[in-house]
Image (cartoon, rainbow, N blue to C red; front, top):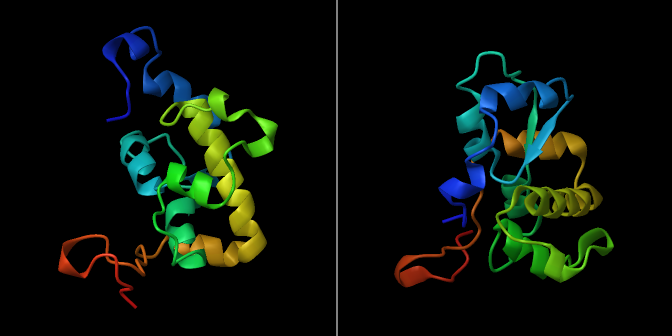
Amino acid sequence: MHHLTDEDVRNAPPLVEVLPMFAGADVYVAHNCEFEQSFLTRHQSWPLTPWVCTYKCALRVWPDLVGHKNQELRYQLGLASPYGIPRDQISPHRTASDVVITAAILEELIKQARWSQLLQWSYGPPLHARLHFGKHAPRRAI
């Protein structure tokens, strides 16, 4: 699914060794943060600091976009080469590239909504304005 093989992670350190490097932030940001949290909450030492979910926020800020996945937003928001990084140097589903894309999406979200809204939306349900399945696709849900 994410183009990772056993060879890609063979020499990677265990998660418990890496987590301390990221502890102590005032807020964490991820695209679909519930996925990330599912890995991290298994470790009691991981702080339950606030999270901003760029996926849930994008659904609220840009309800009429065709899709809200990281790479879909990247192109729909004109972020093909964010921060001047050439498009061919960004590899979808690779950590560093996904971080860059998520940061660029967060920047766009901050231009459209207050920080308090982003936090509130991140802890609410995803608000889908379009049906992407069944006989009603691609009609507006609301």
